[in-house]
Image (cartoon, rainbow, N blue to C red):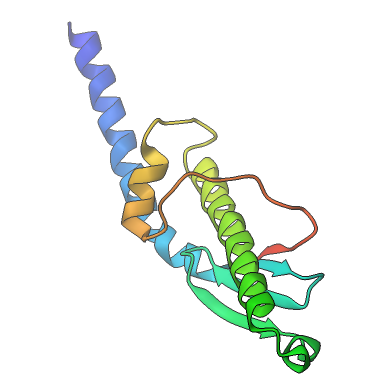
Length: 132
């Protein structure tokens, strides 16, 4: 019986340590960057690990064409690609934080804590993901 209590105490200490690390996660995610692009790089969107859009660039050629629908589609595609990569940044940070242990529901809980919830999705390797 006391063996089980000792195990529970150890688990609670680990949870407290994890809680302290989670407080730093939000600030760390602000420093990480992910970029999505569309139209062969004619539209680029940069976000941070909290899925906040930091920058959007549009190639002059798109503006000259004056094709509003195309521009809107490319911006949406670039933003969506950046979001996928931002979620992957978040998933990678969680993997580092938990030592690679998959804890069910932790990603969603952390997402609520940092404001960047959701499950990670696959990324396209042609665009960059970096830490600042």
